[in-house]
Length: 178
Image 1 (spheres, rainbow, N blue to C red):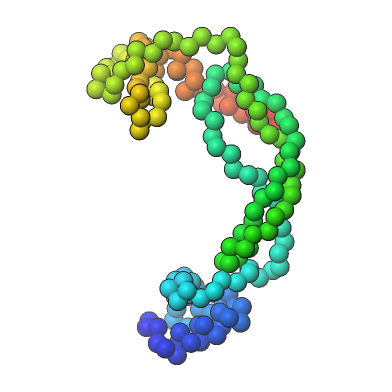
Image 2 (image 1 turned 180 degrees about the vertical axis):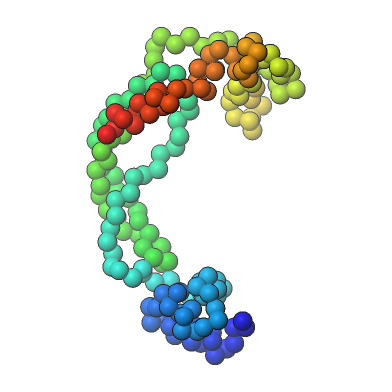
């Protein structure tokens, strides 16, 4: 299928009238919805709001993942935040308020004893050393735990408890949110 000048003009006209990519593809014939979308982007046609109005939907804000910590306890705290919601392909933003049902606050346990790491490099690891990574791999101080590990585990006893949690333990914090 070739994009002739006539078909491109028809595409521009239908797009400006507010038809969806699927509707335009059906009217042009012999072209897919994705082909229409691709051509619209290549032509840099202006975006438009999605059909169906501006019904605002509440979305939870994405939070960065916290590093894994032993024996975590969480407390709920309600919060209200403004959220920017893109509208259609125009990337217009609308400020909406919502109240979060629960915010997780990390409280470390005070009775945890951390093993002393041997700080081994990757080339120094053996079958009997703990392979738990410590730090950011892009920094110079990155290393592996290196403590002695049992025959059937890549981790020492401490890190194995962090890595292998029973299913009911992993689901416990989410059950508290309900």
